Image 1 (tube, rainbow, N blue to C red):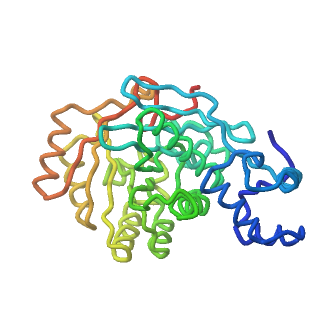
Image 2 (image 1 turned 180 degrees about the vertical axis):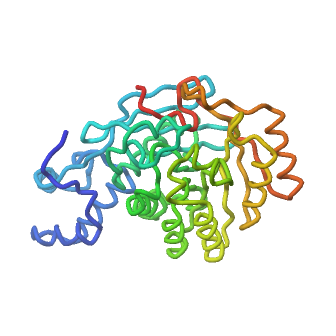
Image 3 (image 1 turned 180 degrees about the horizontal axis):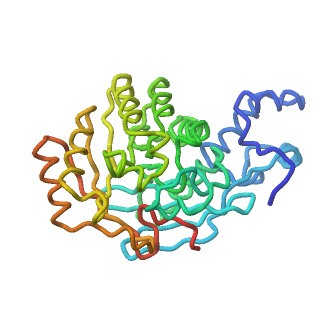
Length: 346
């Protein structure tokens, strides 16, 4: 429900302390409320049991907690869970719990819809309706952490910003959310267990480097030839590969962190030796590795998974050039939860 009250999670700890002082109360009450919001993920002021009822009522009269709700969820045959997340204004995004034998990963959304126009991605067919707030991003993580404990008897181990939206087009809110997730006053997760995946926004990659972020960077590449990349990712005309290369060189010079390239091979699109050679050249600009990702259909006949022969040729050539390459098998395809399939069908 939309309300005129301010969401209390938009306030910093210092602002909460100041608020309580303005009400004639002790500043440390702000610390207590902050802990309830970010360490204990309180959904309601009623839950803040170390505050008096009068204090809780005062908070209720002044603020709201616009917590997300898991409106619906589906569980795949392989254990993957897809959540339809209802936001306070009625809009819906999707997030995914991806389990393996050794880890559970949260795939998190950063926008309602997407700012970009990748032709092979179902999310790109939705217009971008708005950016998610830091607390809405944070809430997806806490919800999936609870599901991980429930279904797999262990807490969430990794987070990838590979859900709906382009994270670097919602940069400030994504960074604020990661700060809360990694803070000892929040979820205290290691930034090394977080990967932000971008389609490649050079200016923002340089900004991350300047700010010395500690999380991992992945780039959704799919072609290292401008004409091919533009045909499947039209925004490449605005952010061409030369600019992306410069940004990634800058990133590595500043952070010394390896880059991961996400790459899908499609029949008749990027499955030639020329495509492979271009990728090898691009990989040599900075230390990097390649994740070859299985294509997940979105009912578009223009995109068909390349043959095993073509993919094997990619693997062989990359390995011959001492480039680490991994095959990423898709999870949750039976519930449209796999990479590129998030489109609010629910």
